[in-house]
Image 1 (cartoon, rainbow, N blue to C red):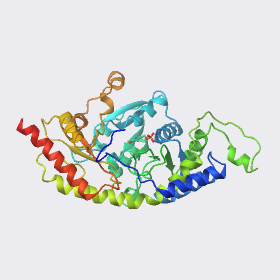
Image 2 (cartoon, helix red, strand yellow; image 1 turned 90 degrees about the vertical axis):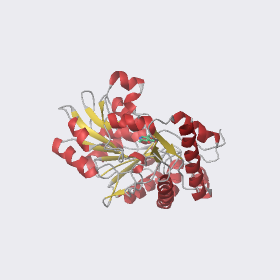
Image 3 (cartoon, rainbow, N blue to C red; image 1 turned 120 degrees about the vertical axis):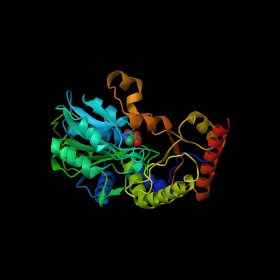
Length: 380
Ligand SMILES: *Cc1c(COP(=O)(O)O)cnc(C)c1O
């Protein structure tokens, strides 16, 4: 493993997580049980959703969401291309067609309500919204378009646990919200996810689809509450386990404080970057976010690869969020799209390090290293 001086992301995992993992191991009940139920209840309370189901990862959550909505062959789901490929792959997994729409502006890299409205056809069944970098998409406008056309709304909240938009948690604006607890997300269980909804009909579908359409679970039978089960529909095994649920409960307790620390670091970045000529900082001043990552826009004409290499030489890890999904070879071949803003951003964006244990001094170091890397290119 590379020994970064300043990594892109880092975990906040400590003695408490270690203790609860041991406790679960000693309990001798590892698959979905009481801790998972507790994690779901606490998460539902936290975001203000009626139902929450813990799942193996956010990809499973998205797959379940599309399946619970009954999407299939012939259906279209409108979504941004500036996202992780999971948002689109899971639509393909149910046989639906991803239709990519552009982002709002160079300042707001979330789905444009106007552009998505233009892409609605008689086949459109759902909108998948991504709260990029944790920042809320324009949910009032998006929900209004969805209502007017009878479309379902799925929120990909992989970046945005804890973000509150106009007084309401992200993930509770649409029909279904999908969260990720992957290792580099704001809260982690290693791999893991959560799917939330207020709708009882969708909750029932999600519950069944998560566990092979079975009417009772191993845990119910273990407790003597059931002796057998029926299968009422085909489904998957997308369950979370007790080890991860126990870690998740600890991580959920830390989420608000860690998001607040991320915010302080982002504010520091935003101030420092004002003095780096030509660098664009999206979402400046926004508060309806979980501050998941720190993306910037490099000045026109700058060779991104050289900037990345120059930062790497100083032990600073960066990344690109994202190569737009419609530019990958599979999607170019089967789901072509023209998205001028997304392409512009995809070519010039760079993600700087951000994690709760990062120090103020490290922010200064990154910004100074970036300034030097850019000056080097201008000098050439
Ligand atoms: C991480 C991520 C996912 C997938 O989450 P997993 O838990 O890794 O399956 C989906 N969408 C976005 C936007 C992500 O960043």
